[in-house]
Image 1 (cartoon, rainbow, N blue to C red):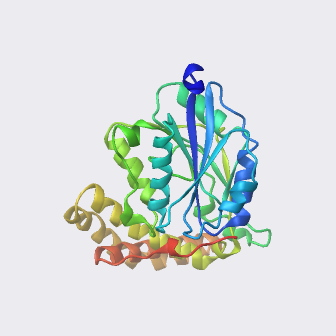
Image 2: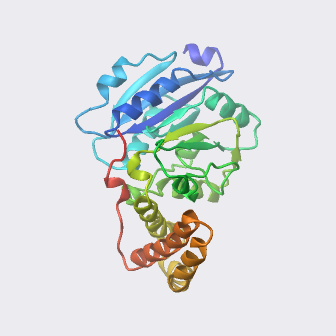
Image 3: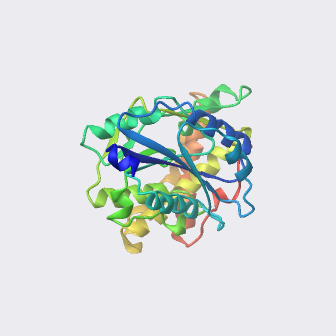
Length: 309
C-alpha cells in the first residue's frame, strides 16, 4: 500500500543459487551496496535450487537496505530456478525483474544505470557488460579466449547473467524459461528470442556492469572446448523450439560437415598466431561436433556439474 501511494515501481532481483556459498555471499554483499534507482523500490528473491535449503542460513545473515525473500525450487535445473523467481516476482506485484548469477557481483551502479536506461522508454529489456575475473595463475592465452571476452555492446539477445526486463514479458505474454534447457543452458536465449518475436526490444546500458568470478575448473582448454561443444548443441535445440526440426537440419547439417573438414586447418593456422588462436580453431570443430550430436538426438548436460565454491 505504501509503495502504491508513493507511486514507486518495484524491481525484484532474482538470484538462483546452487551449492556455491562463497560466491553467493560475495554476490549478496554486492547487492547490499547497490545505488537505489530513483522512483524504484528493490527486493531480493533468493531462489535456492537445493532441496535441503542450503542457502537459507546465508540468506538470514545478510543485511540489505531493502526487502528480501527466500524461496526454494526443489526440482533441480536452471529453468526451474528461474521460473520460481518469476513466480515470486508476480506474487510481489513487481514492475520489473532483474537476474544476476550467484557467481557474479554487481557494480554499485548496476540497477541504477539499468533502470535509468529503461526509463528512457525505448526498451523492454536492458542488459549491460560482464567482466570476467580469472584466477591469478591463469595463462595469458586462456585469458584471451573468446568466452572470456568482455561484451561491450548489446548482443542480439540478452542473457540472465545481467538483465532487467519488464514484468509484462511474463505476466501479459506468459513467457517462461523452457524446461528442456534445464541442464544444457541456452534457456535464456530462447526466452529473450521469444520475447523479441512478440515485439520486445533489447537496449544496452554500458554502466550496468556485473563481474563474474571464473573458477579454476573453467580456466582450461578442456572446459573451453566443452563449452563450444555445448554451444553447438544448444544452437540446434533453440532452433528446433523456435522454428522446426526440418529447418534445423537444413540450416546446420551442411555447416557442421564443412566445419569438421576445415577446422584442423583453422587450428594449424591459428597456432602460427598463438595458442589462443589455435584453441579457437579447435573450438570450431567442437561446435560442429555439438551440432551433429544434437541433430542425432543427443544432449550434453553441462550444468549438471556445479563449478565454483
